[in-house]
Amino acid sequence: DAGVIQSPRHEVTEMGQEVTLRCKPISGHNSLFWYRQTMMRGLELLIYFNNNVPIDDSGMPEDRFSAKMPNASFSTLKIQPSEPRDSAVYFCASTEARREQYFGPGTRLTVT
Amino acid sequence: GESVGLHLPTLSVQEGDNSIINCAYSNSASDYFIWYKQESGKGPQFIIDIRSNMDKRQGQRVTVLLNKTVKHLSLQIAATQPGDSAVYFCAENEGRGSARQLTFGSGTQLTVLP
Figure 1: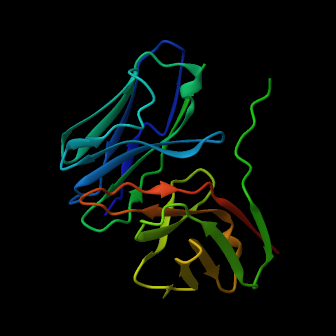
Figure 2: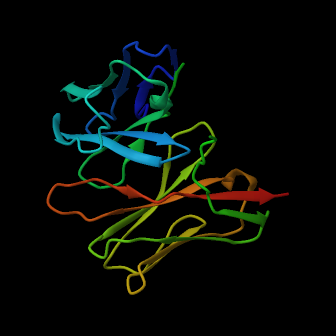
């Protein structure tokens, strides 16, 4: 199994631009999570999906952030417009019925 | 002004010695706990988990101990190797219904000295 796949691995963009991060969960996993990791705040849960349905988005910082999961094998996290304070590493993780989550390699986002 | 980041606890051990990494959790209703290892530039990697009906679980070179009375979790690594150098996170889950959120601790930086 290839594990959780994320793209791009690195993204550098200018303030005000739209950013789209992509995730392919492990095949057969029915829950998908988006996290953000910064030195200031550590690892924070942004949103999670169960069977493609958003269950809890209370961690999404503000309306500039949105996430979708159109099918079981693909999810996106979009930031529009991006701001320098959005600079962080964004992780996607997936799990099946058991509760251990498997993380992707992350996308390092830099907003200048 | 300058921003201040999280001050990660650090642990330095000699190669070959045993390591013990500690974690205090806050939610007495949590019934599932996980340890993750995160190497530089990579995502967190699952190491071992334990449910609240157990107080000890062993894996390959790792042991997790759970003390529910004082809400304390520890990870023991036997014969620590250079490849064990990483940040280690504990995480807890309350497990209500279908909820699968994990709440992560701030992490401990383990450095293995040659």
